[in-house]
Image (tube, rainbow, N blue to C red):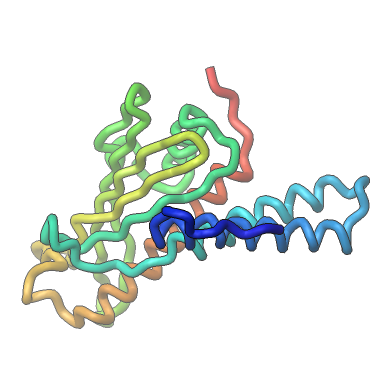
Length: 204
C-alpha cells in the first residue's frame, strides 16, 4: 500500500492519513493470509476492530487544561465507518438510554436538526478513598462517518458536599483525579463508538 507524501499537507493531516493507510493495509494483509472469501462474518469483525484501532491511535490524547476556555477538556473525533450523521445521532441517543439510569435528566440537549447532543453525567471515583464522584459535560456532534466529542466542566464532589471544579486549587490529589477521569472518559468513548459501529438501527 502506498503511503501519502507530504506535498503541502499539514503534519497533522499527514500523520492522520498515513496512520489510517497503515492500519487498513494491515487489515487487508491479515484477511488475505488468514481468511477465505466465504468467511465474511470474520472479515467484518476484523474490519470493525481495525476501525476501532484507528480511532484510538489517531485521536489518542490527554485530558488537559484548554488555555482558550480555561477548563479541563478532552476532545476527539471517533471514526464510525460509513454511518450517516442521522444514524450516528440516533445510535448515540440509544446508547445514552442503555447506559444512564435517568436518561431524561442526563440529556440537556438533543437537536436532530444540528445533530448535536449535550449530556451531564458523573462516575464514581476512589481516588480519595471515600464515596465520591466526578461530574462532566459531554458535547456530541454527529458528522458523516465521524463523531466529534468534547468532555468538559469536570468537577469533584461527595454526597452532601459542594462541587469542586477541576480548575480550582482546592481539588484534592489533582494528578490522580485527572488520570482517573481520563481513564473513565476513554472507556465511555470506546463504549459509545463501538455501539455505533456494531448495532443496526433504522433511520426514519
